[in-house]
Amino acid sequence: SKVWGTEKEGNCYNETTPIMDPNYWGFSCRKNIMRLIGDVFSRMSVPITFLNITQLSLYRKDAHTAIYKKQWSPLTPEQLANPVSYADCVHWCLPGLQDTWNELLYAKLLYP
Image 1 (cartoon, helix red, strand yellow):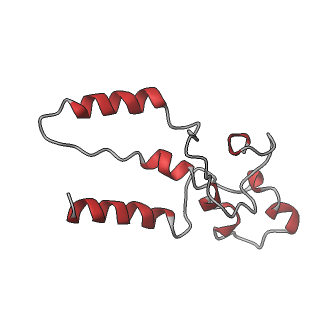
Image 2 (spheres, rainbow, N blue to C red; image 1 turned 90 degrees about the vertical axis):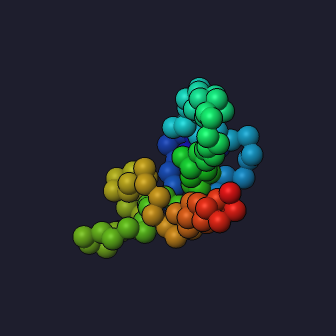
């Protein structure tokens, strides 16, 4: 949460909007690797389009699974306010994010 500009020990609970800062760069998406991939692809004889969906997805702090995944038993209000104890914030499972990936792929396939 500190990369979103909130408190250091914060979490994705009650996050309802994506990150709007166009200069935001997620912590798990390394610029040097992305730059290297771009350099390699630019030298290819066949044109390749590279879309960094990891970076795209990192803008979606509101799309973490948090309280939305099925639990074995209902979560208490205290648990809901502390997703660190049960949430898998590495994967994005809400509708919207994967739909974005699909729309971008579909557009690229139809309009290369």
